[in-house]
Picture 1 (tube, one colour):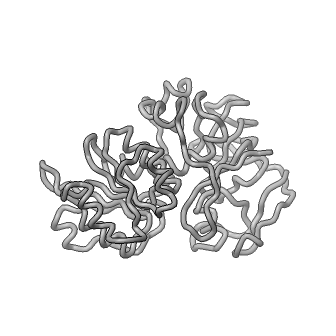
Picture 2 (cartoon, rainbow, N blue to C red):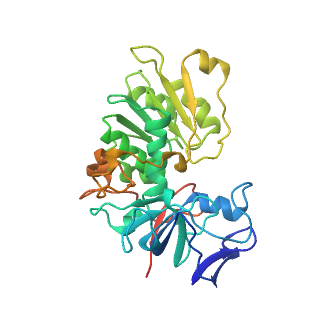
Length: 321
């Protein structure tokens, strides 16, 4: 089979299309015939050799959609699934072996190409909002880098959960955010964006901040966290892509009720009875309550477009041609 293999860490030039033996399907594995793949910023980290992610040689990619060929467990042959080969990668290939616990049925309403841009971004955003931040209806969320893959997912999930959303992005991306219904779009590259957030919120600030940037952005963001009426419950989710962004909780943050957290996409893998109705009783990549927002007619899982070189995290869905 054909695959994209990396034998030395480096730039795009180290990626090579090669012929590899057919993958071996072990006990508890699912073999997927690839229809589309997700291209994530995580893939760049792996190719550049970020410590602890992969060992050479390896096949790129942690997100694939396609149809079950063999194995399967609860999945039947021919069923449409999302596979997340988070350990060892392997998605950039014609056929991919994924442990069954990281395979999820695709709802009928979701196109298979859209599903390829769903798993990592939406599951990461879901973990950040609902597991780490414990977002509640009526709260206010500030999403940094809101036009990226995780940011776009977080906007839709927060809105569907009844939260008010503010998003920061460069000016060129404001139109995209407004198309998603974000009325408070702020440019953090010009002017005093902190003052702008205060102004947009009537001086109240926000309850939750999703922050994949860190550094000075994180430090200034902490000024914007407000106290809830029932007492301090302010949450700052830092490094939502799973990599430290360079800002840690200080003692004064804890004294003032600021709860810091971080999460990666694999922390968000959902397996509960609420999801069963969506996918005919199978473990599914979305919860039932979120299907109208992100898996149903008119839903927009993630903008399927490549990022500009050097412009930070983005996500692309690539279909087999």
